[in-house]
Amino acid sequence: MRLLLEIFRTALGTIRQNKMRSGLTMLGVTIGVGSVITMVSIGMGARVQVKERIEGLGTNMLFVFAGTTTSGGARTGAGSGFTLTVDDARAIARECPDVALSSYGKRETNQVIFGNQNWNTVIAGVTPEYQLIRNWPVEEGSFFDYRDMDRAATVCVLGSKVAENLFVRGEDPLGETIIIKRVPFKVIGVMSPRGALAGGGGRDQDDQIFIPYTTAEWKIIGSVLPGYVSIIYVSAVNSESIGDAEEDIKALLRQRHNIQPDQPDDFIILNLQDIAATREQMGKILTYLLGSIASVSLVVGGIGIMNIMLVSVTERTREVGIRMAVGAKQRDIMLQFLVESVVLSCMGGVIGLCVGVASTKIVSLVGDWPVLISPLVVLIAFSFAVLVGVVFGLYPANKASKLNPIEALRYE
Image 1: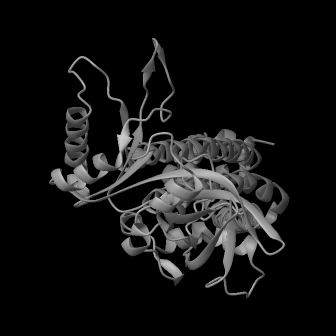
Image 2: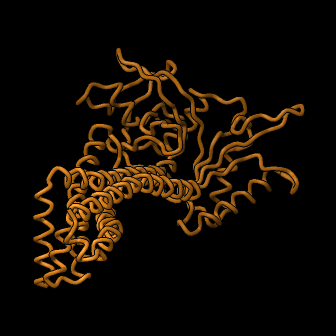
Image 3: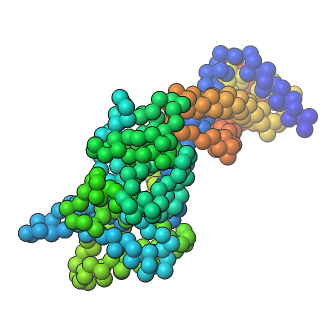
């Protein structure tokens, strides 16, 4: 133990004697450790954000979209056909045992007016179950109910972004009247913020207005074929049954639409769990890729340490000869140079940790980019820096330990 402390003191003394060279040697490791922490933190932050956005869509949720139709031999694009009905949505809730709730709706983009303010946003006609399926609380007021549906009431619930752009900060939207397609609507609620939709082209979920489905069909959006909807929202009983729910829905809709076994579906079912799994896998690949790229800097820093240690061996050849002459063994000489290499690497690693955490915070603040600093990643990065010092210090240390004492004493 005393020998190790003495070697450590000697290593620190050698580093202090060559401050500039030692600093430049540590720079490679510092950049490497800092890069690993920053890159991996950015990758992990992106993964967490995507996961939260997907989970924010709703609990155990499935989307059923209208599919393609064929007319005169020509097939229309997905979502453009009239293949889903209100009765389909009700049948899904009634006949599929793994389905807890279903809702249906249609959407259109329109200009909304309040006083001298106006805003272009999405008008979504949905049923009261929509809020429960999406697990989306109302921040102010309340969501509409089936009494509003039955009488096609001109009431609406605003997304938080719509409320921000139509009303002056601090002004209460509840009870106010807005105009949609020359039809006055009373604001009865404001939804809590949800943010941009993951995988949805960056569309903001808060930038929409919800109105009763019957109101949308009869007074705002209209319908070429009454009773047909563009989307059905479904919530499975639990996360374990979402796959069974998807199969139940597929079988039921094929039966209701009289689709033959050799014919394709005229609807599209979107499973959020599949999307989440795909995004998670992509996020992992991104994180590993960024970490691998940053790790190259650590390897370069290790090569720098090895080169400097080889130079140090050459410069201190006579010192090595004297040490051997007074009784130092090969393992003592090897340990001396190896400790110096590890100390250099550790000092660079500590500075790199500080640089990595600081740069991650800066990226988060300046670029408004989600980051997640994991203690495990910090530990791995520092451990890798120590490993670099050991691996790249072995060759110079081994070379020093095998010097011939007589030739070393003669070295000028």
